[in-house]
Length: 209
Image 1: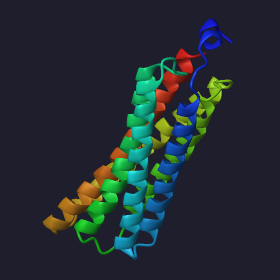
Image 2: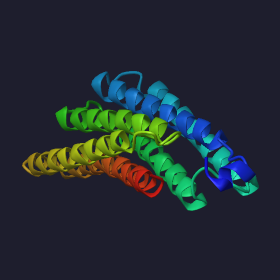
Image 3: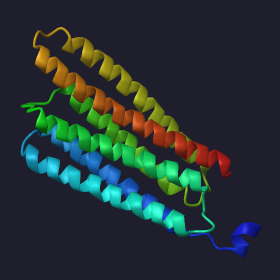
Image 4: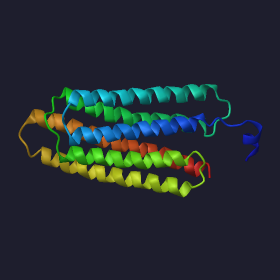
């Protein structure tokens, strides 16, 4: 234990909140996969995704409140803020895409949507493992491995998006092209946000070991 930790005990509540936030993101990604694989009861499923997005907002608010009243934090305040914001961004894109599909009146999903949703799901599972790891930072290599995997999955998502858009522009319906292109791009953007989280976690692992 360092002198700072001995003099002023650090507040570990942040780690509990980050664990809860990561679980919420995983739940939203799981629901997204079910949403695109079983495209029925769309309105109700959108409502459930929105509930998780609101839950994430509440957790983010608690993190910032905790940050404002804690003198000594277990991570740098900037790191805590960046991680909370990045995790919340994933939820925003999952929710935003689900609401978009409903409001656009999409009647069926396709392989590209399913592939991208599953890549988001795989990414957030890795993120959850890495988030758990920052509590003790006993195994920074494990955190880095999880982050590298998220980066790999994001690269795959780039390829899925590129092929989906190429196929889309072979069709003739301009309105459908606009709608589906938006949806594909927002699903891929969710994987970008996963990569942002991975970058924050990687920075934390490097700085604190």
